[in-house]
Image (tube, rainbow, N blue to C red; front, side, top):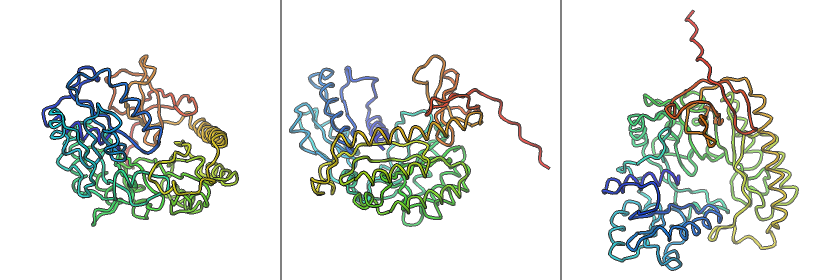
Length: 429
């Protein structure tokens, strides 16, 4: 969502006569688009603002945008005299005017919520030449006790299906063939007429689209309609990122996740029964207040039972203004205990992923070449439909193209692949 918002802002500024530069040196305007989901993210922003000072001329405009801007508002102006603009996620439309004002020495905070704002008339300036991030929903109504998102992005609201389809058609016209539908609880999408299942069908049917992904869904919102669409629409990929957060029903209740361990496992079973070969990744929080040794063991056992293909794992980060702040101080899990649990969870997740990936060696996959591999040296990074990262040989001209490969090796998380000829279609009987 952060990347998508940055693309919207760049599109708006480009339409107003600005152009992007490759670095902060000599820039007239520097905007730092921020996340507030964890304290570590905010600390990095504060460090980045300090680093940017050395690139700023006398007339350079420095602004902070996004969720951290929404959360802290005027405090950012008070704590950093060089910051002229603090702009929340619903105020990007005013950026050109705010920048003009800042040139006259004014300082602004724009953090009002606008529950009608979807930026439909913005032409995003996309960073990625391979896939497109398309927001279909903004805000969240779930109010999990640890989460700052409802307080930085407001209440849930969905775009009209026709608008999402129109943007998808524009993406195809730009030469992109993969889209990622974005929402805080994306599968709760409903525009008043159509649900997320209908949206998957409509986007998946746009001529030229080859892959449809989405993130992040909520386990409670996998209706029969959504699961059928995933199973029946050929362009919808065989991967779902399904945040679990904890494998303990007691911890989940304190998190206000609104499902139990059994509910989550039943959702996994429904998805796998409908979509053969589905890969599942997840989010897990370690050390949520009150998490006991037994509750953590329940998380480990749930990880074993599901057999996740990968997981984003986080140590609990208290956010000011969230309901978790009101939990009794004695429920705080000591840092040393959190650190030990985190290492155990990480080892388990990576071990399961490594074992599953070893069993996939020799399989053939269609991959989309996304970018140059980190090591370079004639290697490219590609992604399979089931969200596996595959490193293949090739040159930069191949980025954005599809390739059939055989999985020849694995580091445990990443595959290496060798190109193979596409299998010829069998004649009709």
